[in-house]
Image: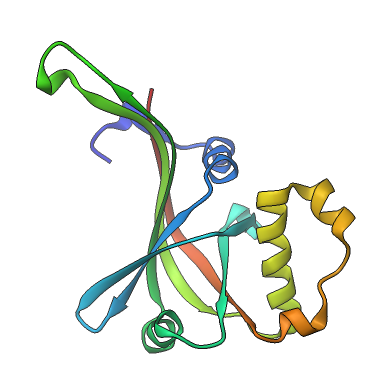
Length: 161
């Protein structure tokens, strides 16, 4: 990272971005061309603080075709956008906080992992307590839903305030 003064290095600071943001921009490969899509997400840190992102989608479509063909993926999550104005054009900028990374993406292995992914998504958007009060997923609703799991190999954070 060129601007080390803007780098977020602590997991706590990166997790704050993940908590505050609401959209992940996922990049996959479509042959020799990139394909990017904005998605809702859930996330968790596992062993050794490794970050895993979770997404949901239908059981078929271009995104799944691309994941099946090439498991390499990258992502960007950003929040806290605030325009900074100035007297001259080059004085203008943008405040932000972001997390970017890459890793390997795959379909959820089974119904239990799919339910875990959806639980993490719901907890991210509804909050743990509100989601817990809703009860379990209806198996009929889980049937037509696919989940994607992105096991991150590299993650970096950055901010401008």
